[in-house]
Length: 328
Image: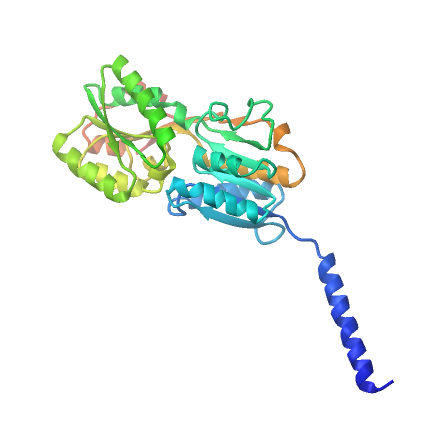
């Protein structure tokens, strides 16, 4: 046999061994993360999610790969983004940032497992059959934020005792959430003799314009509807509230941490962490149908006392005593 034939034969064997070895290497699972928001302002939320995933034994880039799909606040883009993840044949979809990603994911697949985090009742949204026995391919975390409109208005009235006019910011890009929150706010408002004035603020420009309008009309307070969109613009909203000296009620404590007056709602970071944990459990083989939907167990009432003093608000000691945290 000629030398070059031997070399050629060896070369072919090396290629065959390489291909065989590559075929034997286990492929790591891929998680599709579907979000209605942009990455701005969501770093802490996603850190909590990744920590939960790590608690279940999975680290991005080591034994799992994560593909993110950010809708950047454009809810109408979610069905296409969800369909893209289905075509990618991901192992599981984590649907975060409100109910819309979960609904889009459910519409896109009935076979790929979906773990959601939603502030609205997942039974009413028809995501699951029941909290204890979800059925189907979805389970997740329900953290109540969308169910607390009445309580937030009650606290706001106690913070601003003479209030009769409340401006309410809602996101028109999320029509189902907007309709639900507006209906509840108007119902509660009538009972409390509050006039609820609706402002559709679905972009940074519309938020700015609404504040300029309110600078002249001077409502007694502003109520920011529970929507992930507003969290992405939290710093700017707090800045504008301070500039125009208007008391504002928020749904999550993130706003208070950057100077917002008050918030009442669930610990969303804890919810994201739990979604990460559940996602890891699904990757290990557990079925969503067998994992009960978890409910938030901790609701936080936070007051920023420094902001209250700047606004000239005298907070009753009894109300302060009920706060879970007072920022001074």
